[in-house]
Image 1 (tube, rainbow, N blue to C red):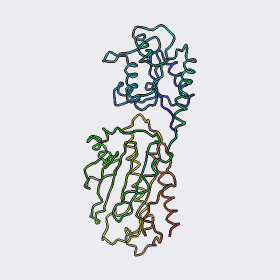
Image 2: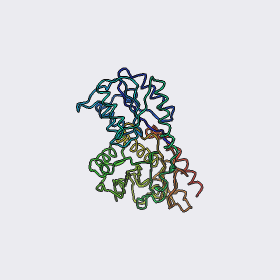
Image 3: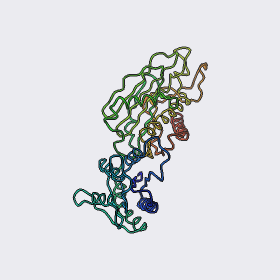
Image 4: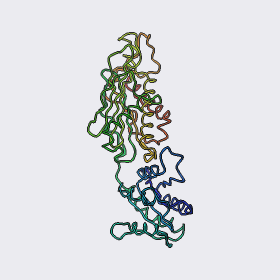
Length: 383
């Protein structure tokens, strides 16, 4: 299970010891602490938006109130008060810890709101950093244990590998990836917006990703059930290479990328044996790399505070037919070995989807190498 992310809200000045105690209590309970001031690098967004966005990336909101209410926002509310209201609007569990000290007027007002008998939260009082650490660990452990005991689907993309999209008579590649957390990742209204589709097109066409090509026509983005679909049709111009791509992004964060693994390069004639009888390992590697780059760019763009740290992924080749998977096929070669097995079915890279870290999206070389090795073994076993 991914660790429970816990946002710590408090004043900063004079509260360093307590914030470190909060971090220690969270980690002892098995959670992951999120302290914006201490943990985050410089951001392109405002301090207010950075904090509120960080709350959105968390599972639990924890507020520690001492003698001072702290700074006020332009709205007139305290910074920690605005963060508390945002967490409640997001329906996050809220844990309240009040230092047993006299408070200034703002601090006393907020303490009454936080611990209101009907509308507030059952709060815990503490004296000193050590007691705060212990109380946080005690309070949070029940939430962490409940989350860890949930039944989980350990292969959330298995069903997406059974019937991958096919590009005509070409060998097709499906790349499938999903966050480990089982939840709504993309808001349905956002996913259905023109702005979201436009941003996905920008990422897909970007120089760093190159999933789509500017020279190839696209179908209008559309919704299919709970997924946004963007498609670049295969086309018929085999002399310049046919480069099809189909992208599907689900509300649950599942990303499916289908591409044609053969027929992508320029050919001197429509009967080029290298293209008809082989699937190039280099082409499959390049398509997997582009797919990983898209997934990285998508989550960097839509999840900048890294709520999603681990992902399941798998790949599947379909429509191999009698093609063999070879490295560097030569166009002028007059004959090739034929795969005599029946390989029109989908061939997954791995028996079960692999769990990878977010950093692997940027450095997927080992994962791609592992997938190619599996496919080569499968091909040799069916010749």
